[in-house]
Image (cartoon, rainbow, N blue to C red):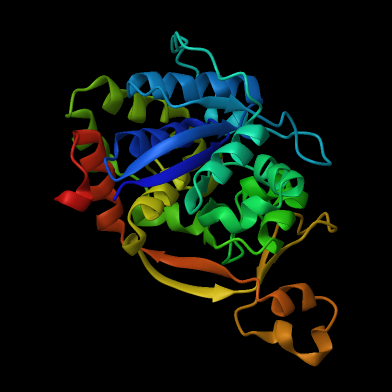
Length: 328
Ligand code: BDR
Ligand code: CA
């Protein structure tokens, strides 16, 4: 049976690769793509999403949403993804316009119309937090919510403690993590090391010789340089596509466990830190008050710890090649 997906994205160079994967997968129907400010301002992010959808020949509704985090000024990642979010190669705009609906309205409508829908978030959680606050019925209607975000091993890419999507709008993330959604957290650690596309992977994708394959690699050229400058590692690191691969093929996450997870919003040092209660000490008497919201409501998040790296790369290649890896 075809699964229904809603994707919320901030339109950066790895986001568009994740979108391409979902739009080319025959296992899922993407019912809507909602856009949020994050890597780049929301107008540019919407243009990028339309561009990726057009490359895939998809008519999926694209809806622009929140222009800034709930309580804070927007801090973009243009140093990483480029001023246009796609490596500043001057891609032509798509011929199609965005839907006139606001992303928050689109999330509410789409979720209520498709109970059991799977939501994949690839950017700050502003749109989803706004939608849940306005229409709490969507919480029970969402069947699965895969979040690219967080640093459960406490190795952040913005600060030592925090990953970008959570750090940009920690208040929104806190609302989402506390809501009781069936949440799966795909942290930044999963796209590091051997999970980054190496030269051989890149050459193999480019050898496909298609506009989509070329776009996937070239739109990430600046991000590859920035990743090297940031980590010392080479290659194209693709956090959102890794999350999408796990959304499409859950078995690619090879170790996961359920935990209480909360988000830090008060401290400057650890703003946006995803605090994972690995040893279930949240239920201890001494933590009463601090974590009661979680264990009283049994609000747990599935934290993905490890990735089938070969499987993830095979899934990406198969989707770019035109056949789903799930089907060989
Ligand atoms: C996340 O932040 C953005 O730069 C990427 O698109 C990804 O969603 C990684 O920290
Ligand atoms: Ca993103």
